[in-house]
Image: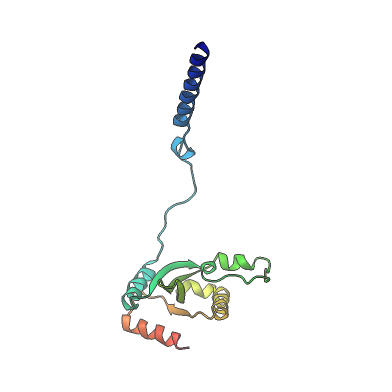
Length: 163
């Protein structure tokens, strides 16, 4: 009987110790605030918000829009063509808008809003153009504006899709 009481006491002691340890263990986020050098930013510029609203207005109901889509999310480096750094060249770039069909998950076309910053990135723009030609997906370039006319935008998209 004495041995039974000692074993029971030991088991109870172990259980209490385990429970106390679990209660006192906290994740680093609970103990302190980690000083991370980041801040929240806008996803879209004013011109991009204006464009998004107009684009959403003219799209057929079976299509959806995603914004700031990484190139690596819509294309992949072919096997056997592991050129050094090539994957990084597509991984760190994005397109402003991708139109896709949720029913099948496929991308239909991409849109780049070209603002004044594109004057300094002509090589990058040409690289993207070549990538989209390679994957046979239209990349439509539209000049950034404060406002967009839905009818004109629809005509621009349709004329680029016909190419």
